Structures are given as structure tokens and as C-alpha cells.
Amino acid sequence: MSISSILSSIKTDLPDHVRLVAVSKFHPVEMIEEAYHAGQRIFGENHVQEMTQKHELLPKDIEWHFIGHLQTNKVKYIAPFVSLIHSVDSFKLLKEINKQAEKSQRVISCLLQIHIAQEETKFGFSFDECRTMLQEEEWKTLTHVQLCGVMGMATFTDDVQEVHNEFRSLKKFFDEIKENYFSHNDAFREISMGMTDDYPIAIEEGSTLIRIGTKIFGERVYPEHQ
Image 1 (cartoon, rainbow, N blue to C red):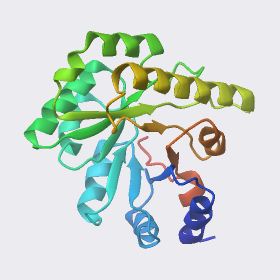
Image 2: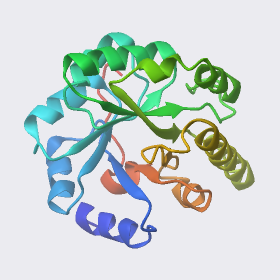
Image 3: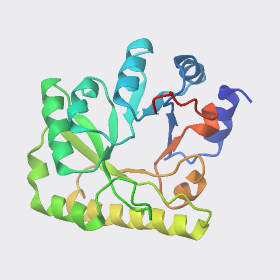
Image 4: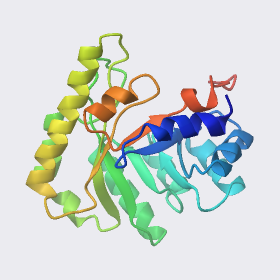
């Protein structure tokens, strides 16, 4: 199947409130162009250098989402153009995004990454760490970032119930902090969860942004140095 027909079949099944992030990391510009010409406008990358190179080569109405672990010293490279950073996993990072966004005279939308999986290798705030950060309220002084919701990755497992439970826990946490801190903030509405293998479960559990790569573009060709 072509990229165009795959995108069409995925989007046909999506509820109206769910948006698709086409994860294009390690895939060539030509594949992104094919998806773009099929109407896809949101693309996700998780390496800063690759994302900046693609941004320079591709149409400027693309909405670039950064979905990987972001080092503070790399924020400056994407601050001029990134649409949404899914992976804010510390207050230190949020402050740096704010600083670089101010330099670019922008307000950058961000999601709080929450660690919901069993694997220790995944990044993110614990629920309690995130609660503490929000309670301390220093984030309210950051005028060049806009907190728009939460992101999480489920455990990579065949245990469907485990995945349901993890996504459900993130939705429950979103509801809690929405009520306590963002009840009058219409921008705080995104729950980024679900990838190629588990996005139908994520949608059932309340996702508004799904991140799909392999299903659209096929297996990645990883650079030799990775």
C-alpha cells in the first residue's frame, strides 16, 4: 500500500477529536513529501539535528512536533519553529524552552511527559513529581511556554490489560490536573498517547494525539552510528 492509502485508512477510523502525528524520524524527506501531498501536516521527530534539517527542506506549513528526549542544550535549535514539544520531563527543561522561546519571540506549546510504563528506560515525571512542580507554581511565571496537556508511553508488552491500565492512569491524571490547575485554560486539552502497536487502545482510553511511524512509513533504516 502507498503512504497515501495507509494514511487514508488510519484517518478514516479516527474519532474527530484525535489528531495523527506521523512519526518521520530516520525516514527520508521524499517519504515525508509523499505524506504531505496526501494531506498530512503534523510530523514527529525525536532528534534535533534531523528535525532542523528536514524543516529547512520541507514546506513551511508543516507542524513539527518534537517527541523524543530533549536535552536542554539542544532547545535553541528547534525553538524558532517547533509547534509542540511532547516530551517535557523536568522543570529545568521547561525553563530552558521558555528562555529560548522568548529569544525567538514565540510562545511554545508543551506537553508534560509522565512516566507510566514499567520500563525504567523511559523518561518522564512521576505523578508525584509533576504534582509537586505544579503545586510550587513557578511554572506560572514562564510566559513563553503554554502547557497544553500530557504525554505518556505504555509498556511494550503483549499484556493488553496492562496497556489499558497505563493509558487509563494517564487520562485520570490529566483530568486531575486539568481540574486543579487548568480548569479555565482551553489550551490544556491534549493527551498524547498511543503508537503503531497500541494506538487503538490509547484512543479508547482518551488519547487526542497518536504518534504513528512504522505503520505509515515502514521499518526505519537506522543510521550506522545509532
